[in-house]
Image 1 (cartoon, rainbow, N blue to C red):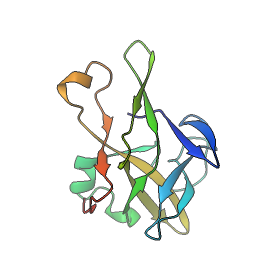
Image 2: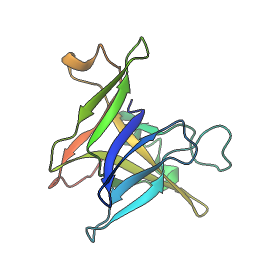
Image 3: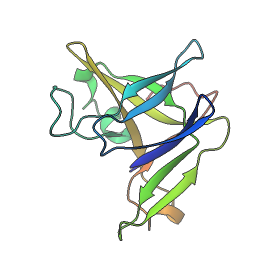
Length: 143
């Protein structure tokens, strides 16, 4: 489900984990700049956007996120972390030129980014039943 990410900012490698209520993810803007945005919402956080940090691609396609005026984005990371069923962490590199797909949700001035997830390929199903959707740099995100 992507419980953490690793990325480089100002020549420093940073690790961010979803349980941290201050967690932010780096997004690539249309102008080619990187900005940080709050990653999802936790129970203890005020707001009206959905709880959690992930959005299933099939729920996006079925319209469940439409009320949040969703915008597809590219999350710029070097790697993501998944925990297996035994709660062991595994890091997976994101290749150069690839991104994790994100969804920016909005409500009354509030905005947060959610990691878009899909079913993993057969080789990664033993790690987790949901996997971040990896897209190429030239992908036009329409879903």
